[in-house]
Image (cartoon, rainbow, N blue to C red; front, side, top):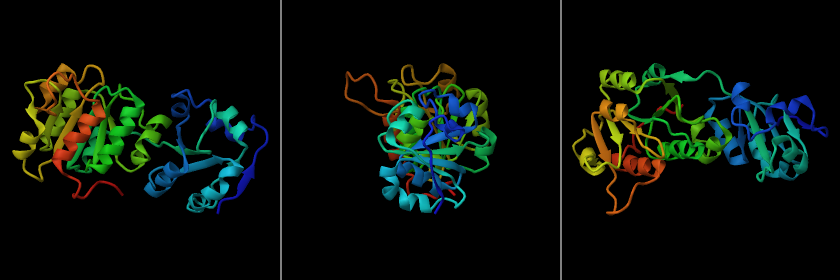
Length: 277
């Protein structure tokens, strides 16, 4: 069990990593991230991918947190403050009474992710909403995705809102960044990966038809675009096939992560081995 450290001064420098959490860039600049809630902390520890630097909690949450804290290395600091102090440090009320500070490490590039030989790859282009990014990780983990690649304009998967929405799935799935969608598509094709661009366009093939013609063990990259405008013309042109989720006539579109989840469910890769540790 880590040692509990009670802190009474909100200006204590040991709390620096938890300050002003509404600023999405603050932790990224320091090479850290903040995870919220006991359940997400459990996923962080279970993944073993990111070191836990410290935990911040309240006296009222200590008993409920005991099992989670016992899974931490013994030298992990656990800072205890009251709820009002936690809110003052973070900049808003923390309803779940638990925050954890983790170390980011280096971001993987596309080439490194591809060395993992993912069978099902999710490629995100300009998905800027952290909740959508988190939901794509959560749905992806549940529905057989082995890894994700995110364009440089995508939201940070290790921003606290994305982590929270992912329910910790971001800690389990390998992910990396890519710069140019055309260059990425060429590299995927060299690796024998079929690239399917998800779009509501009428010319796209219904997802069930695409899956029916696909060899079950064929590597697939499903590309998902921006919440408002979808995939760019470059991404659509770079894909091998455009696929769509059939919708009732008169319906404009589905949310990006909902569309992706439906498409992944059709792919039916949940029984395959994943790239998780």
